[in-house]
Structures are given as C-alpha cells and as structure tokens.
Image 1: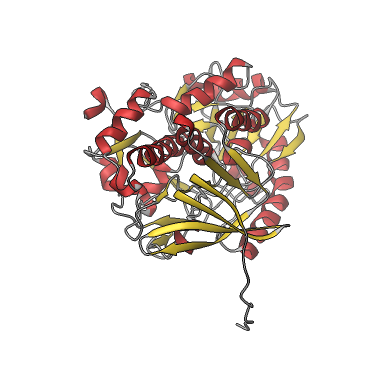
Image 2: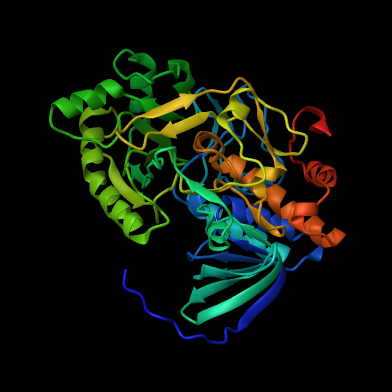
Length: 458
C-alpha cells in the first residue's frame, strides 16, 4: 500500500474529565449515567447526531426476563425502560420462548430519553466526532484523539470506557482483540425497516389458527394470541417463494410488532461477509441491504397474510452489527460458561439470552438455550495491558459463541452500568478501575437496583 508521512503537529486539548465514554449506544448511555453520579465530570462521545445506537433502529430489547420468566436485568437499564413507558413509548416485558422476553420501544423516543438523562446528569455530550487514536503512557490510556470538522483534538481522562461496539479504543491502544469464529467468520448484520398498513390481526390469525402452514419453528401458537410478538419461522413460505423465483437472503421470516396497531419491523435483510471495522465493507453492506428490501416486501405481500396493503414507513439509519472485534481480556467468557450456568465471584451482570449465532454463510441461524441464568465477571471488561481502560458491551472479552448470547441490548446495558459504576468508584477511592474492590462494586450495583443473582451472591 502506498503511504505518505504526516507532519507532526500540536494537537489542542479540548477537555480533561474524570471518565470518558466512547460510543453513545445502549452500553454507553448507561455507563455515562452510572459514572456521572456523585458529581463526577463525565464526557460521552458519539459519531452520529443522536444517542441510543441500536435502540434507535427498530429492534426490540430482548431478554430483560430470564428463561423462567424472572427479571434479571434491572437497575439503570430498567429505569431507562420506565422513562420510555411513562409516555407510552415502551411495552411491558413479554415472555417469548425463543428470546426469553421482548420489550418493544419507540426508536425516536429512545433518542430523546437518552439525551434527557445525559442533560440531567450533567454529562457533556459531544456528537459528530470519531475517536481515531489514543494517548498511552505505560499501563494507562491517558486520552483519545478525536477527528471532526474542527480537525484533530485530544481529550484526556482518568478512566476511559470503550463502548464503541467494535472495540475501537482497545484496538487503537494495542490491547489484545479477536474477530469472528476460528475461521474469522462473523455474524452478518441486518438493516431494519418498518412497514405500516399491516393487517396484524390477519397475521396473528394465520399463525395461531393455521400453524400447520404458517409455522413458527419452536414457538407455540398460543404465544401469538395476544399482545406484541416476534415471528421466527414461515420456512415453508420462504421455500415456496424461492421455488417461484423470489430469492431471499434469509431462511426464516422475522417480523416484530411495533407500538402502532398496523406497524411491523422487518428483520430480514442480511449481508454476509460485512466487517464493520472496514468502511468499504460496511458501505457495501448498507448498499446491498437496501437493495434487498424490495424483494423482501414482494415476498411479504405475496406469501404472508396481512401485508397486501403494507407500505414502507422508514428504514433504520444504519445497519445493526451483530459482531466485530472483541477484547481478549483478563477473562474470556466462553459458551461452556453460559451453558453450564457458571457462577463467578466477581459477577457484575447476569444474562439469560441463548447462544444465537446467525451463520456467516447462508441464511440460517443456530440457537442453543441455557438452562438458567449465567454470570458475567468484571474481568471480562478489563484488558490485560491497561489498568484504567474498561471495554463494555458486545466488544467485551468473550468468545465468538459466548458473544452470540451476550450481544443483546439488555445485557449490554447491564455491562454499561457495571463499567460506569466501576469508573465512579475508582475516582472516589483514588485507584484505577483494574484495582477497584469488586465487592464494593457489587454493593454499589445492588444499591442502584441491579440484579446479580439470588441474594447478590456476595
């Protein structure tokens, strides 16, 4: 590759803060809220012009409840839902055999609630900036370099939390990271979009009363009799469409009811081989996914009851990325840990969502269900190489298979609360986050209403 030499220059320091969070998605906004308690100076960076990340693209929030119907994501994530629900912008947590539970939200309202919380907490939000490099000194990341229309600037911080989803800060710092399965294959992303004018009673009737034709894989018909729902199935309809010349990128029909009575969000675009850390790959994925929408809509109108008069309402502002870089931290969570429901002394979040791997090739998916809750320990947030850096969300330290379970937004929000709380305690105690007393961290999380298992297991 041809290169040039960039001349050295003085970079102005825009700000110095206690905690700097990069990434304003579900993980980052909860981390910022947790870190900002007790009057700490917190800054949140976001590359887009709104906060919320995957909360804003039409996805339901999965698995606030566990496989037994008990809530295991509480604390600040639940407070966020309560804020939405107060104005009719979130549903109740509804049990679902495939997804443990689903919570339908208004994507636009999620942006407003996220920003309101930041303003109430005194978090300084800076949008339209990219973190493009880091400043390191020994075992500390002293700050990040950002790029914007104002040029290059530095932001210095006592603690830095990487909530980028892609592990950007850890990668720039040279911390050990991984990507994909043993062959480098990653789960493909999806560009969500919504349809209005859907006759949802007709769709519900087909699933409930004609289950032999409109099958839902492992989900029983009675699950669809009332309330919000998510479909995962109609394989026979897709096969029929394929035989008649309509070629789809997926093997199952995934549809999610919205908060409006005629609204359906479609989770059926799929682009294999996309790497969100490479702009040319991400761009190609966005273009390809947009091109798939017309074919999917033709399929829905022709083969799925209720869609004859449906019209395109909106397309999500960006693709939902399921997988990219992950940290290889002080502990790497494995599928075996999840499937055996392993308990950890340093638990900081509890999950229950199954191992849900969208295949890197083809259009299908594998789901492996856990028998109960599983723990995520604090060490999954800690890089081996640095003492003041935390990595939270789907880029935390997990294998390809374990991340396929922990990547859902509810679990990521819980990890954000753990990371932000740890940053706050580190400042209060005069230590780095790597040296935080984890028992005190657990106690702080419990005081905030978080769930760490029966009795907190302290």
